[in-house]
Image 1 (cartoon, rainbow, N blue to C red):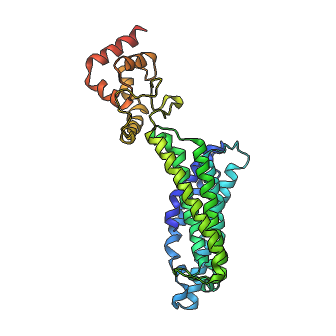
Image 2: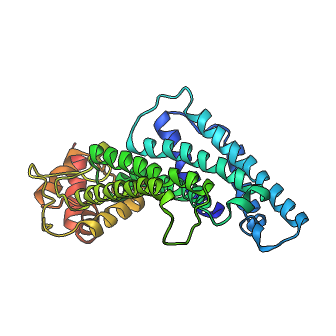
Length: 334
């Protein structure tokens, strides 16, 4: 679990910092805390096995080791809270997911501290309390972190924008559905409902019905997410034009020139992202030619040759000496 959550830690640090307008508080402490979590995660494995009959001293060791790992985790939590405290917060979709991660992961950490105590764990072992705990840490922790990273870097790796309203609907439905699904499981576990058994007494039917409603809301949130993805990757009018990072030109109808509107742009977007990182960002090709990538001459030539995709423009430029000569002439002329 500790290894699975580490990538989400990095994503949340980036997201909270970018959308609060402040650098991450205590970066050195955050790095040491993450390293400590990764290392200590190798020494707490038996806290899942208190009920197998291990001796008292062994259980005491793993109880202490599990509680110690909460120290670097707490350092990260307080550093994140301090990062956004006093910042100019943008309530964008990535920030919402990152903030939800912060709240839900902390809640899951509290129940983890309860289960770290071997005496309490013997009572809650194989009940729905354990199921609720690790879902709050992973399903509501790591998954929310992944969603935060997806929305945060979607424009960068795809060259496309997403519908902010659909993104917010996705967040609120997933947040509500996940809590309705997993929060009642704590009370079911305290009441003694065992896990891994498909049937249960009628006394548990009330909270199980609430969990079922929450799972349907979760499913609706995923449907909204897939609809959002469809509009991101298949809507030809969806062009990410902020600072001209990804596209230089677009028709009034949103057409990308020689590409068929009915074809998927997923592979093309990958090419564009590779181009942006390897060619556009370093800009070595255009610097070698003495050209300005965003000059009006470049736009005019792109429009004249009906070339409206940066990646393929780069290919044509390398193979067409006449086009290169025209560009150099237009640049020197001004």
